[in-house]
Image (spheres, rainbow, N blue to C red):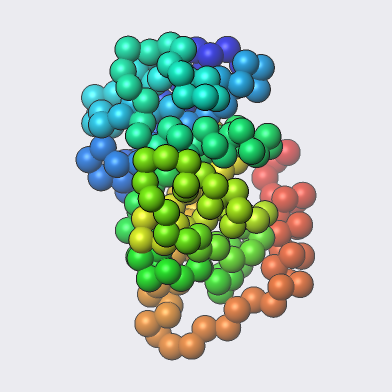
Length: 215
């Protein structure tokens, strides 16, 4: 994949966030890592989604130096870069403050597996990470420490971070986090919920990975 293609994929991923109702104004960001060069393409800082173009995406190296681009990279770049340096399996990453998932983050609560959709997509609960200072590598460190095998994590009092083997996979995880968070939020108001047993979660997740879709 060329950097131009990755730029387009990262632009398309960022464009999905407001369409899916996951961000407001200029909040949130999507990035992707090129497997050949190791360069990372990320949303520019403080630019409205409707004003962005593919060529506005910023290319940085893993230390944060701008390689290509006429705008400053996202203020969350240090978080993304820390994850990419310590998780060689990750090639896409998303950050949002989507309403229902961030409500769980504000409460410092993980999202348990109450739904088969969670078992399928996440293979376990969506964990909660500790509160971190913003602007440096602290969130990246906490993500790597606490996310486990999940593609998503909530950071206390902050929001949602998702990772994936591609930009598209990370964006899908961010969409699904908000979807299940909304359902679980409403369900909790109806009474006590029963978590799906761990062995059934594992079985459902394996079946989803091997049997779902056309692949």
